Image (cartoon, rainbow, N blue to C red; front, side, top):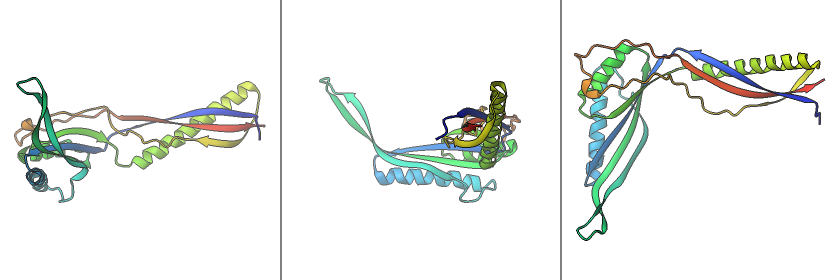
Length: 217
């Protein structure tokens, strides 16, 4: 095994403008009966879906990211100071995601539709990138280029020659491709009468690293 090696960490950086809007919603419904909680959950999502279809979305535009229904209890002390549990019913939590091309007027129209549905979900708006693979590929290319440039500088300074690449280490972790810009607006304020807010989200800045090992000739 060749123990004459040089190991360099390369850092790749990419800056991109958001071209995707992601609305995540959380619907919570509670009822004393299991079937009642399920009916409330079904009615809430149907209301949102109908409202979105009315402004041009297709039926399957809403994607479920998580769904669970559990018993809900509340702890309390009785008259003798003993802790008891009170059954509050079955709580259904339904998490949904809606994605569409970046368009602030479309976002305002979408929020107005959700507000008109009466479902009143909790929601969060994020700005992201549609072609995540392209960003990931550019990051890796930049990271390898950065590592090669560093290795060349180190080799020149040390008076040595780089040989073949012996190994490349990469973690393959999931990239967070979201703008730091957060948009929070109470659904009660989203209406047809509300003017569309024209904002420019901050560019998405992401970096990644690779470790490259060269032999030394």
